[in-house]
Amino acid sequence: MPTVRRKRAAAVVLAETMMLLEACVVFFAALVAFGLRAAPAGAVWGVGGALVVVFVVLTGVQKHRWGRAAGWVAQPLLLACGFWVPMMWFVGALFAILWVALARLGARIDRERAAFDAENPGAVEPPRPPRLA
Picture (cartoon, one colour):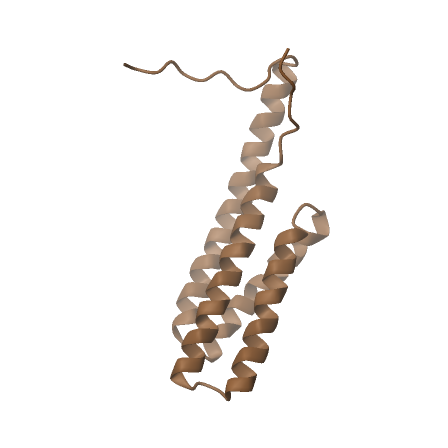
């Protein structure tokens, strides 16, 4: 009989993915701010580097309930990058919308998985539709 691996919560996986993507976006925004000389170089790299570290750390703590709450709190930080790079108002808003959408989608996937597991206690994974030749 195959070993059943514990499934990771979809909400956690999606939140981790978003936090890591947001860390990359902040890094590239810092590069743009440095190139545009939007602020002194030390300030750009200090603030940008600190935000990158914050988002990377938040990537690792998304498995905790407080980690996801911290992810919600971190969304305005991404928007605040718009003070140095105006395009970040748009990019930050886009990522905030994605954060909300993926939080809802992850919760829905987890509910559907739980319902499936309750109905099929011995199933290893949901049945897949047959492949068409």
